[in-house]
Every structure is written in C-alpha cells, then in structure tokens.
Image (cartoon, rainbow, N blue to C red; front, top):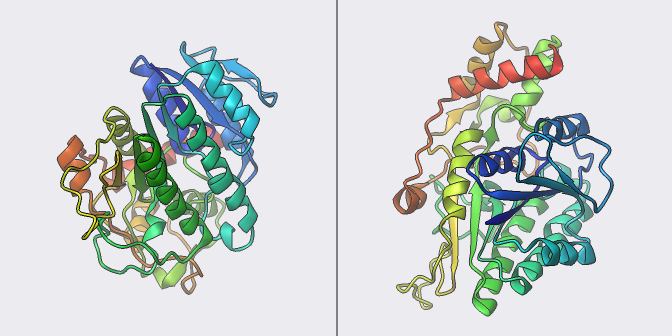
Length: 349
C-alpha cells in the first residue's frame, strides 16, 4: 500500500510519515518548504527523514535512511504537478497535513490561506477522486469551534461561527470533503487537532516560543493575562490516532437523519473526529511544567487576548475512543521534558 502524506517537512506530517514507514507502508511525502516559520527546522526534519538539500521543485527523492520513503517538493495548488504525481505513484490512501497554518498570521496574510488551504485542497480532492484513492484523511482544527463556548467541544455541535480566516478555511475543507464523499463516494475523514506539541514542534507555537525566550533570559508573552487553557496533545498520541483513522475508511451512517442532521457523520462515507488529550491544562500550569524542565523561572509579560484567539479548548474525543480505541497516554510534564531535551540537542542550547 502506498500512502501520500502532505506536509512532511511539517511537524505532524514528518512524524506520521516515519511512523507509517516503520509499520511497513510505502510513503511519498510532499511539502513546499515555505518560510512561514524557521526553515532550518523544516530542513532538520527532512534530514532526520534521510533527505539532503537542495530539493529541486517537482523531483522525487528517495530517503537514504528509510527504505520505502520518498519526498517531493511541490505546492498543492500546482494542479498539473499534483495530477502527474497521482498518476505516476498510484496512491491507495492520502493524508493531508499540508496547510497554511496559524490563526494570527491569517489576519495579515489572507491570500496564503486561500492558495494553500482552498485551491490546494480542491486539487487534492480532484486527484483522489480521479485516481481511485480508498481513503482521504485531512487535517481540520479545533479553531473551527470559534465562538462556540459549550465545552468540551463536540464534533456533533454546530461550528458555523469561526473567528479567523484560518478557521474558516478548515471549516471549508470539511464542507468540500463532504461534497466529494456525497457526489463521488470518496471516503473522507476529518481530524480536528487540539494544540499538538512535542519534539520537532512548530517554532510559532507557545512551547517553542516560551522555551527560546526563557533560555535567552527574555520575558514570555502570556495572553489573556494567563487565563487560558489548552487541550495540549503530545505528538506520539496524535500520530497513533491518525494511523488508526487511516486504517479505517468511513462508511455512510445508516442512522443519519436528514431532518435532524448530525454534523459529525453523513449518509455519505464521511466522518469527523476530535483528536486531543481530553484533559485541558491551564496555561500557567503548562508554564510551571516548562520552568521545572528548564530549571529556571519565566519572566511573564501579561497581555490581553489576541484577535482570533479563544480562551479555552477542550476536546470531546468519545467518538474516537469508541470507534478506534484511541487513548492518549503522555502527560504534559513528560511531553515537555522530552521537548526540552530535543530543543537543547537541536539548538545546542
């Protein structure tokens, strides 16, 4: 079985591709290696995967560390390039983790989200449709819950009030996927990720920013005056959940009622899941765990809530537990300790 994983220079895509190869699957990774954040981290992930720069656009490279793993530098919005890749490779399944990420960045760079998350995603759907892909798993986000304050967030709840363009683009991916599941029978599963963290994590995320600032004796920016909580989910727990989902294409829900429609399923082969720790952590407790791992106190710059941010996220993962026996096991203290060890090694800090 050959699987396409997009976003393999990114945090989750990198770890997922390696986990799939280690389980014996053949994997082709795709990424455009954009400069939204420090590309040296992206190059580091690719080197860890057995690839060496430079990466010529549109050329397929084979890992020198992992037999069965390949990589291509390409944009999702490159329609002809995507069609050619699917025709040449014959993918059985696809997992889309490539996207323009970030809530705050979407306030100032909206077109980046349209190009990657909308134009790029329709290209991917069309390629899956025309090349008999058995299952498309795609990354959504906890950001889609927007103004919804009923917690824990449930996939069965309405999410029609996003508060950032990033969230709106992810909600759009869910709608687009359902359309293709309905019209063409393409099995699609969306995963709403909740604050993923761990070694090789994104430099724009709080854990990375806090660690760097604290090691450089700079204050950390703590929004909403610290009155924040997040369902921090360790990367290994996320990858395990994604693999379980990939292995289980959805069927239509025979009990789905069009007069009382459930947003999480459909009469079409379509499904949505939250994937998180189901255990929200107060931001101040998170910072305290980081202080312990680093052996130093943080200087805190307390700030108001930023536009596009929500004060709390908390995932109801009952459906994923019930359907696929999903059980996150990594504590925040253990996860932060592992991240700090990786950070010190990678940056020699």
